[in-house]
Amino acid sequence: MSYKVKASLSNKHMHLKEEDIEALFGKGYKLTVSKNLLQPGQFACEEKVDVVGPKGTLKGLRVLGPARPETQVELAMTDARAIGIKVPLRESGKLEGTPGCKLVGPAGEVVLSHGVIAALRHVHLSAAQAAEAGVKDKEFVSLRLGGERGLVFDRVLIRAGDAHEKEAHLDTDEGNAAMCDADAVAELIK
Amino acid sequence: MSYKVKASLSNKHMHLKEEDIEALFGKGYKLTVSKNLLQPGQFACEEKVDVVGPKGTLKGLRVLGPARPETQVELAMTDARAIGIKVPLRESGKLEGTPGCKLVGPAGEVVLSHGVIAALRHVHLSAAQAAEAGVKDKEFVSLRLGGERGLVFDRVLIRAGDAHEKEAHLDTDEGNAAMCDADAVAELIK
Image (cartoon, rainbow over all chains, first blue to last red; front, side, top):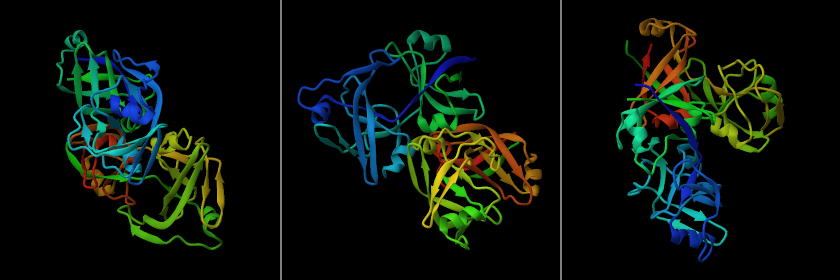
């Protein structure tokens, strides 16, 4: 079975809970939409936050909206190592036992006890797209990318349902290892 | 055919020609061996050099010895982007048309007109090991890495001959995309 999916590269970014938005940007602050993302209801914000680890600072990480129940900082392993954080590979939202960091915004700081992850690579599909591709939510598949640095990523998680729209998400380490450009298309392999 | 090879991660580093060693460290300067590498005659040096691009500086890149006919700076694409260099994928020594940078050492600076590359992933094999693996110098193979971020790298160059010893070289983007540790073993696939 061959099924094609656009491969999008996620640069380092974060999702914030309401309380942390207020701590970083001020009481009653609301995030500003910069650009809607392909995933339904998700958007890149104008707001940026510094991430401080034991060995350094990553300046100006983009906030993605809307607010979430828990704050989550997604770093490529290269980024995390640069500031002295050994980051575990996790599915979004699975934050138990993950390392923390300090966040610095224009109006204040937040010390996170946990929430820093390297995102498990995944493919978003609507329920109809999953049916068309012959895959199920939570299933693992492989993704083939062609070109000069062509490769096959194994252990790619399917996230399927009506909150999703067809798109593969890789981080910048993965994108560089495959030398993906913004228009890369991956082949989903069962 | 299954043939196992240790996968080594190359952090960003450089090879210097004699003239640039003198410009960076002083007249008549000789590189100091810090550690011999697995590849015959190759060594990591005590010396470190800063690499300056249009958007920033990478501090303290390790020099690898011995001196080479041409200076070559090997960066992961993540590193190169951080200092504003769009780096091409190249086999070691194929430097025509590559971007340059500025190098800053303790005794002086060198402005390179070219020589910055992302290294084409490759497997070193002695002539006997290549025969055992059933591959030839300059052939492309695939490499499978297992684990949580398991993947198969396609387009991996074989570099075989008596100046080589069994070892796969990946850069840090590739190593992080596969979540390799220092003891990773890859399976060579024809």
